[in-house]
Image 1 (tube, rainbow, N blue to C red):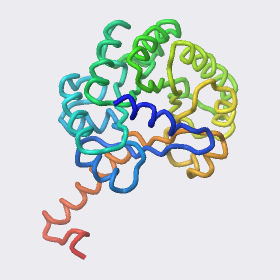
Image 2 (image 1 turned 135 degrees about the vertical axis):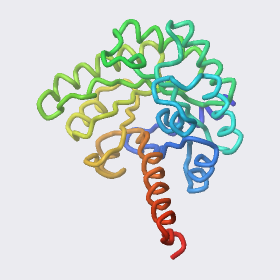
Image 3 (image 1 turned 90 degrees about the vertical axis):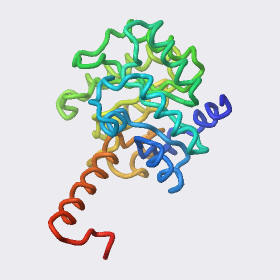
Length: 254
């Protein structure tokens, strides 16, 4: 299993980003793997919603790990598991939860620097302790940094970049393997973070980010799609159901 961890780690190359089209169950994992994915990533929102839970660790860890086990058993490539805030009130509890993910077959994890249902970021020192406990598992720990969430990069970009890099340095010192900076599409900020971050940088793709080549040029090492594939699939499903239930033919019948 640790061979897959190193395989996954090696895929994070600044300027040659790994693309992760996030999935939510074994079936979606198989479809994305068959499309040529070099690694599989769960997205907590889609995983939870697909099982009838809300995002934010409402889905019990046992259920999330059972879903992870089915995904790992279905694909041959490394799987990284979105653990939201780490499923633990303390650093020790986070470490225990991450160890369970490792034993289930995960090659990497994501951990947010906000606790469930909270908007304020965790203090840097506290988050570093949680990341250190997670990193003790030996997995690739992708440290999510929500500094840009709800902020205007066009106005506060330099200050937000500085705050992000302060956390990046602390997270790297704690043993994190990567830095995930979602809610950011500003090219200048992305380039500045990639240039100075001690960790390979993961960006959440959204309209305005540009394509893979553009993000590669900025120094990005990993591109995620988050809940967007799940949301698009559910929109398609609902639209097709409306067509069929009102007497029409679905698009796949054409």
